[in-house]
Amino acid sequence: MQKKNYNGLDLTVYEDVLDNGLKVYIAPIPRHTIHARVTTFFGGSVLEFKMDGDKKFTKVPGGVAHFLEHKMFEKEDGKDPLAVYENNGAIGNAFTNEFITAYHFTGAGHFFSNLETLLSCVHEPYFTDENVLKEKGIIFQEKKQDLDNPFSIVYDRCLTNTFYNLDFKNTVLGSLEDISSITKEDLYNCYNTFYHPSNMALTISGDVDPSEIMSFLKKFYKRYDFKKRPKVEIKKKDEPAEVVKEKDIIYMDSLSKEVIICYKVKKPDYISDEYLNRIYFSLLLELKFGSISPSVDVFAHDTNVISSVSSYMEPVDDYYIIIFNVTLKDEVDGFINLIDNQIKDMKFNEEDFNLIKKAILNSVILSTENATEICSMIANQVYFYDKPIYDMYDKLKGLNFEEFKKAVSGIDLSNRSVVILDSKTKKQD
Image 1 (cartoon, one colour):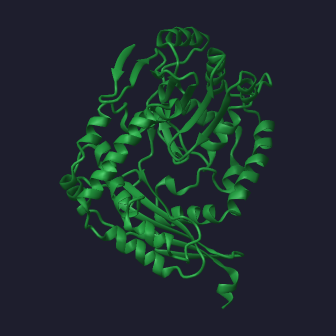
Image 2: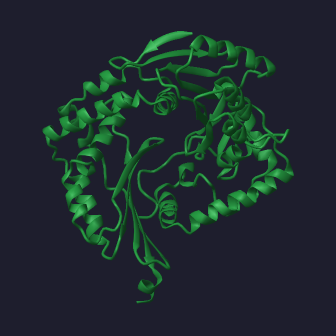
Image 3: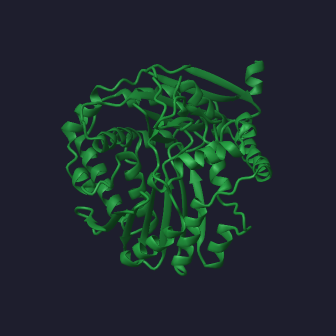
């Protein structure tokens, strides 16, 4: 077990790798509540893969990672892990996004009982034709709710209009057809491929003793015989820079207009450091649309804007996607032009840059006071960068205004897809 420190932060991490390949990161902090999370690096955007030695790629239906997440809570002995957490005064849950699936609990007492429940949950699958069929009904209802949700409707269409080949274009839940086609064999195939400890990270933070945890883990894993996992290859797909469709209008019963604007941007290569590259790119959004940007006042005083304007960035293979979402009363083109003009305007204020930099540093410091945020931060860094960024604070402290301008100045923002949900009456007009 190695003791590491996040430079400039009051955060120590004890890290180790078990014989079965499980990566363990323990961050003791003086908080009574403990958070533990198992992250498996298998999310909704992985649909084609093969084991080392296989001749052909296996293709699974969209939504299989999310379906698998649901089924991991059903056990042969009938015990519900969520009920065990609740009886121990803890709260447990799980989530699946495009990149990962994570199982977690938060609680103050009965820590080792809860930890055993967490690990047993992810290592003891129980899939039958009957319980898979039953789960389809549950997930059908979840998907149907999405199909009635204006944001989900435009977001799903936006992904299919942005990507030609990347499986990121498939929604995490999958389509109704995908869900219907998932079999017990699909689940076991994905489980055996991606739920091996060597493809997982365990992160724990709170008032814990790392030595006690490591002793528990070594004893716990004696009950399992994990064979060495063959190398897994995710199918690489070429993706053109252009979007599939630049504009799409969906007509349905609606009193307002739901709008999504998605920019598909090739990752800049001015900075080779992937972490810094992503930070500088996100700073572009903060400067143009963050809390201290002029856009905030414009949106606040625009009577056409019903909801707050949200924006975020996701890395997708060799691209970043920048997504804006808003609910409008009526006119759409003016809002789209405003976003387009703002994001393409490469004039920046150094004073604003330094204010945002200071806010980011303060946010990082505050995040190290929260066990849940610590576990999430470490797990995400391991997924995206293969290891915790222990010099993260140093990198953020060294953010440079001139370097930032050079990093974002050459990006191509010409590939954009817009999806609008409009009322049926408008179509009839």
